[in-house]
Every structure is written in structure tokens, then in C-alpha cells.
Image (tube, rainbow, N blue to C red):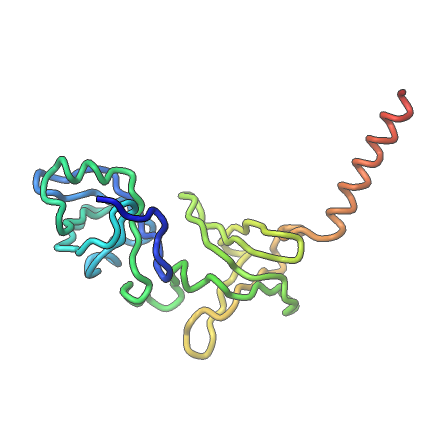
Amino acid sequence: MTATKKAPENTTRVGYFLGPQGLKGGVKLFVLGEAEQLVDLPRVWVEGWGWLKLRRAELLYPGIALHLSGIETREAAADLRGANVYAHDDELPALEEGSYYYHQLRGLPVLDSADEHLGEVVDVMDMGHQDLLVVSHDYGESQVPLQAPYVVIEAGEDGEPARVRLTEDTPAGLLGDDDDYDEHDDYDDADDGAEDAGE
């Protein structure tokens, strides 16, 4: 089956397939997040395959095995190994208060402790040991660890995430600034001068 490798808009990556589970087409999924969030999904988008209906899900703590329409043998399940799996944002279940999906953070403004606008979240990356916010700002893009006490997700009146705040504990220069740039320029100029003097 041929399908685009680019995930559709308004989808969130929920994991990737590890390999077959059982003899009847089950596929073990490495989950980014909580496996329970995927149990009631009606479908998933599989890289290289497109949308596949979810026949049933089998919790295998801490992971899960998905049984998909059209995947009914161990051999077919093995063909999915390594494929990224996405869910439609509107079909993901609501999370408990204070927890958010990656797609809810994209587009949020990033502020400092004094309410100064620093940039905007353009993506969120799961790196295994920690999540990283990809923040676009005046000096380019930076990856900011999504962890306390540096980063706080603040909700609006509707309870939805409204902004990302970098606290006073955030290391200086995390998003880059003119001072950092000038210091590097001065260092380069000093090197150039040393080289010229030696010629």
C-alpha cells in the first residue's frame, strides 16, 4: 500500500510501532505519553499506510498493542515495524487538569517572568528523557527543555493552555540574545587579530 509519509494536519504523534504482538496482526506500539489515552481511538494514521481503523487495543503495561483493519497476520504486523503513528487531535481524549497534548502548546506565546514576549512555540519534540519546546524568536529557533522550574504552562479562563512562561530560574541566554552574539563576534575578532599578528 502506498501513502504519503507526511502526517496530515491537526494530528499528533502518539508513538511508533515496535513489532508484532501475537499471531493475528497485533502490533506493539511504543507510546509517547500514556497508553490509556489510545484505547478508545477510532483510527490512527500510520506512516506509509495512511488512516487505519482501530479494531481494538490491548494494554500491555507500560505499552499497548493495536489491532488494525487490514493487518491480520504476524507478517503484516511486522511490515509496520518502525512506522510512526499519529492520532487526530479532535479524537484524543481529554486529559486531567494541568496535563496537555503537544498540539495544544503549538502556537502559544512564550513570555518571561516580567511578561515580556520572547517568542512562540512552533513545535514540541519528545526526546525520551525529556520534552523540548521548539521556540521561534528574533534570533532564530531554540530548543527549550519543558521542565520545572524553568518552564510553566499557564491556562486561560477556559482551562486551555494560553501561554508558556519562562521563570526567573531559567538559565540566561536560553533563547539567544544580542549580548551572546556580540561576545562571539568579539572572540572571533580577537582570533583574527592574533592570526594577523603572527603573519
